[in-house]
Image 1 (cartoon, helix red, strand yellow):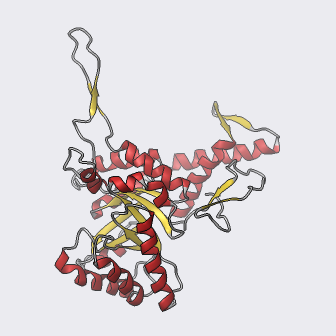
Image 2 (cartoon, one colour):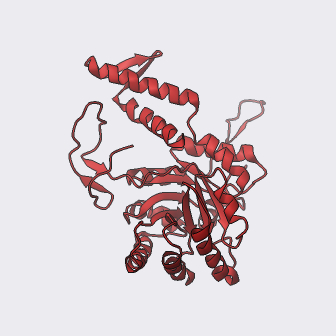
Image 3 (tube, rainbow, N blue to C red):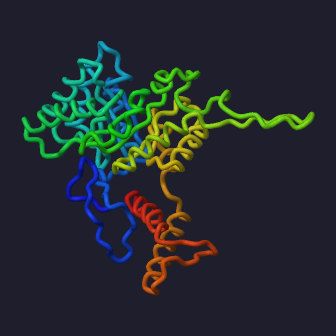
Length: 348
């Protein structure tokens, strides 16, 4: 993980990196990394489910998100908010990150969510997850309100932001959204609403689409093969780039078929390959799968450790690149290896 810069404009700054033994090559512009958190799995629970919330605290999820938005009907918003505040004060979440998905800027419930949770919920809430973010002004508005209430109550811990990109407008503005606030920690792909916003021909929540693929060329009378594609590849890749360029964590969103764990794992693996740090779990059964996919294996950790050792020796020998197991490794390999080792340490 890159070292945090002393200040950012807004999340980066032109400070010449000092060369140190084993230092990574980087731009003159330094990226300020967000608050580090383990973020393999995010377990969502409706705020109305007061009996289930304490169970999430005992789950294996890295982050518990109590929801006040989509899973709560309009006439239960106040009840859900009270349940969440009570949980923040009474439930022992241990060392988990605890977040609340507040209502969006389209709703008059948002201001009450922010004010009541900060004024009445104590210091336990770590993050607000903000839905339907369309532009940087949306983030600015919630940041302003959050800051005012925090200052009014003298809150010691600053609340971070997770931002859900789930509209065509949000995807268009994803880079300015990612840089909109120093509170920003993560970008999330809200696949269902995004599909509706782009008028995609699907009613599924995540997962592949059997109509999205290519047919091989005609070859006489031979049968032609049809290969499925990943309809969400572009969207996730764009979110990953915006997140990483601003020091944030990219997180893949929900997978609606809770009975298909292998399908969930497949979607999680492709997200991990593209650079995502974790994935939502909309059912407890998905938590273990997310943790498995987004945790480096023992073999990966061993290889990464050997790369770091080999490059440390190479530097002593005055070499910029060496061969390990018949493959070239150089200074660019250090960052990849270090990320794996650091994540393994965070999990343990």
